[in-house]
Image (cartoon, rainbow, N blue to C red; front, side):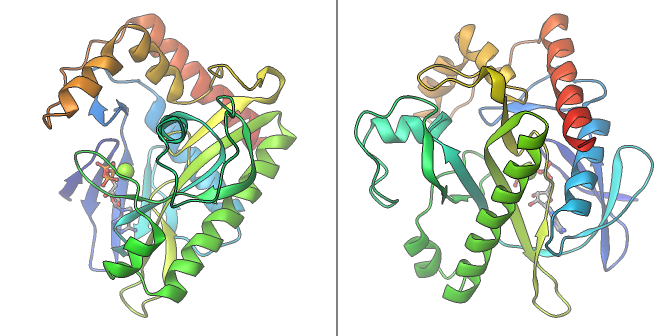
Length: 277
Ligand SMILES: Nc1ncnc2c1ncn2[C@@H]1O[C@H](COP(=O)(O)OP(=O)(O)OP(=O)(O)O)[C@@H](O)[C@H]1O
Ligand SMILES: [Mg+2]
């Protein structure tokens, strides 16, 4: 099989005209920088987690079947070049943008909200899809740039928010909070229908333990945020911010065994808890 795309996380193979194969690798990236140390076992968990959500969520998706433990056969789609982010909490880059007064295109936010505040309602906060750095894009720009027609935008926005709410309910039953999530959609080339694509798992959402949740502090998280937090602690995030001004990226540090093991343990824990509800 021919490798057609080696992404930050997945290797994508050409199968036939209608289908492609996702290989969920053990690669991990953070702050848009691919790490050099693999998280052995991560690919398998992510593949099974994606299968769980695709089976559960009530929306048409691209999954056909799993092939082995870390590969998924999917329908080949024409991807819509935006990442449909839904956020239920003021966290991550949303909090940074809030602090810098950059959220004027979204709904109004009260002043002085603490980090990790729960939003009144989940918001749709799409970004561009870029190899370098995803940037927020307003709904107006999505229409002006003719990425989507108005009815399509409304469909992906409503679907994304509904999917997020459903995932929040499921996670809640096993004691987790899904703070935010990213979906990708594509068009079925045979009829133009918009279908949920890519993957749904802890590389696409932030997940916190309900029992540990407290606004105003950095949350203990059971996803890639653990790695992001470690990278921030060692000063790597500052390097990313500094170099990105000139369009450059820092060299990733090797990950210590303890960080690799803890990351894998967290991925496995969330998968087992949520998928057994
Ligand atoms: N059904 C599909 N048909 C065609 N392409 C798809 C489908 N589902 C997802 N994709 C695309 O396949 C790629 C998956 O690889 P991966 O997510 O590892 O790459 P990536 O480097 O993260 O790319 P990106 O940052 O653009 O998402 C993504 O570009 C994604 O948009
Ligand atoms: Mg991707």
